[in-house]
Image 1: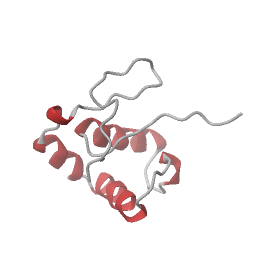
Image 2: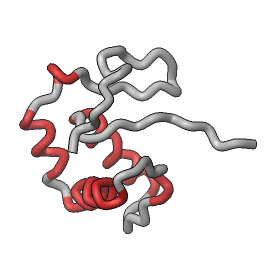
Image 3: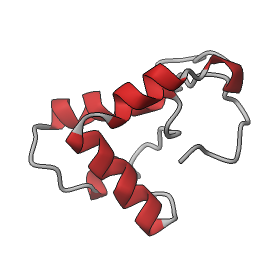
Length: 91
């Protein structure tokens, strides 16, 4: 469930393109349980676990709006359940 690489997790976001992640010692069980209590977020985690590789947010076919999907990923990231990296689309 938790990422194995902790590089950059202890640093705050440097720019608007860097996504903030909690340091290992900042991860709280309550936040993780809250993040996993939502069916959509649990679905995201299950799909990530089943795939075993990095997936882009657009690969998830969730029955919610894009803004709600973004919210779910933010809750999971801020709880320390997953790690997100911003990658711009090639032009």
